[in-house]
Amino acid sequence: MTVSPAYRPDPQFMALGREFADPVAPADFPMTRLRYRNDRAAATVGLQDLSDAEWLTAFGRFAPLPGNQPQPLAMRYHGHQFRSYNPDLGDGRGFLFAQLREAAIAPGKTGRLLDLATKGSGQTPWSRQGDGRLTLKGGMREILAASFLEAVGVPTSRAFSLVETGEALQRGDEPSPTRSAVLTRLSHSHIRFGTFQRQAYLERPDLITVLVDHAVETYYPHLADQPDRPAVLMRAVVEASAKLLSGWMSAGFVHGVLNTDNMVVTGESFDYGPWRFLPRNDPNFTAAYFDHSGLYSFGRQPEAVFWNLQQLAACLTLVTDQSGLLEALNGFSDAYRDTLRAAMLRRLALKPRDPQADIDLVSSAFKALASGGDDLRWEPFFFDWFGGAASEGRAMAGPRAGLYGQDAFADFRRRLADFEPDRPERLDHAVFAQPEPEELLIEEVEALWAPIAADDDWSALRAKLDRIEAARQAYGFPGPGDKNNAV
Image (cartoon, rainbow, N blue to C red; front, side, top):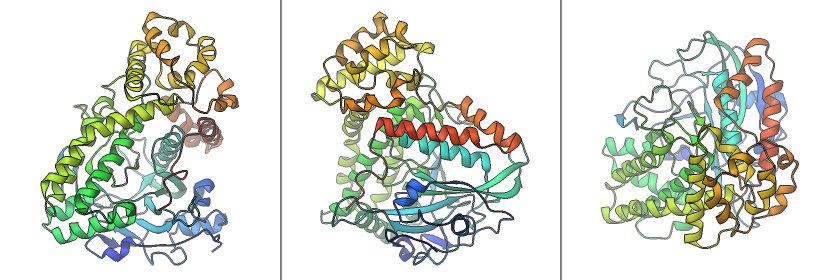
């Protein structure tokens, strides 16, 4: 197999033993046809030189990568699903395929440990009567979600590979039979809140301690020498989760299923099912058609994340005193306020001034978004005002100029004038010469799928991904592989 010198296998999770995962075999698919390979992500872990045939062997047949796990591992976990505890969870249609080090950007440092994990790779002991498969459309949607979230600066897993597998699947939420696929994602940990919940449910504080030590030493090694590791981990997870939440809120993203098994200790967004991006400011907007109570609506995502953090803390009470855990939880509000302020300034490409001025601007921005009603879509607002006052002329000459000239936007525009643009040279990118930004509303997702379903025509999807990549480069936000990847 053709791997580069940057390829550094480091399969650590399997050393934790059978209490945390089950060795499994991948499905024997009737076909493996490569539909997507993320060579930019592959280059960060030394796999960019694989031929297409080698790629399909690795990510369609799941032959072990050199020096890596000898076989896939279906991870064990529990979780609250829509606030109801489920002890029958686990990797039911996916597995941890490999772990490897990311190329470090700092000399003398060690790159982050990353996971290659799957979705749609076959049945496991945790499939619960499911077929263990993923629809091709579902795989396409995951690629789009991860690509767009990365473009707008949200901590996210990356869609690494999509292989069509030649089976006809029956699904209740898609016209069936529908085509099958297997997705591989590159992510910074799959240790879920629910991984801890399982051991708490089984009354295994010894294994919770094993998990805490593994998580701190692997993902937060700079904190490893501090006393009371469970509280140290809790503080780190609170901060990482607040940052992730702020990314979602500034991006107008609704995850849809914020269950405890869909949140990981590294604070990275992953597993995109019924996701949506806001068409316009609407705190009651939901992504999942089955979320009848709006539990995971856009405006309730802060509540959902905090509730999940409380469940993690409850597990850690089995191995440490509550005081440190409560202190960590009590820091969530401040962490969310600070990270949301930073995320909004980043999206508007502004340098921070002072905390109060920054907060006032962010509050004004949300009020402006709300005042626009149905006439102002979420993403164009940030596109028009990218760079703040440096984009005043561009915004006031664009398609929403009439809206921005109304009194409701006066306070926002006045406050913008007091902020210095951050890296204003980004406005020279050709993307900002266009009247409209890239968006990812559900209607477009359906339109991108239609020619694939009808004629196996992938050209519209490829063109969309090219435009998202151009937007990513234009915005210049730090991405999953751009910072904090060396320890």
